[in-house]
Image (cartoon, rainbow, N blue to C red; front, side):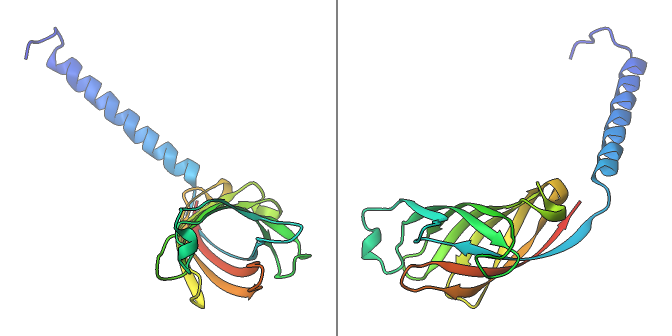
Length: 184
């Protein structure tokens, strides 16, 4: 390789300067993130498919969806309420916004991609991202928390879901969530 006129001392000084900048940037990142914390959240998720306040709507299905008892291929978009208690009149703390897809031909499994958007209290403006399989008929389901924003920056953890109530005629359900996350 041809020498471009830089001395070994100049190259060494540039390398030291670059490493110093990287070290400073790493130190600044640590200062900005602060100390890692653990948070435990408890709320209720209201998935309303019918009635006057529908929160989840079907937006797509495969031509064969109706031939499966699991509704395989069905896609819904949700803007579900998150409340402090199981009652519809309980204080709203946020929304679960995202999609869920019937993803199994043989079992009632949903693939969920949802963001919990908190709209009140100390978590107001913060979010948690949940992506994973929801095995609907299991008593307790565990799904991963894969990120967050605001007070939940760089979150990771898990959500435990337990069906509190379901109306088999309408499909309307209230699901209790216990969420544990590590975040900065």
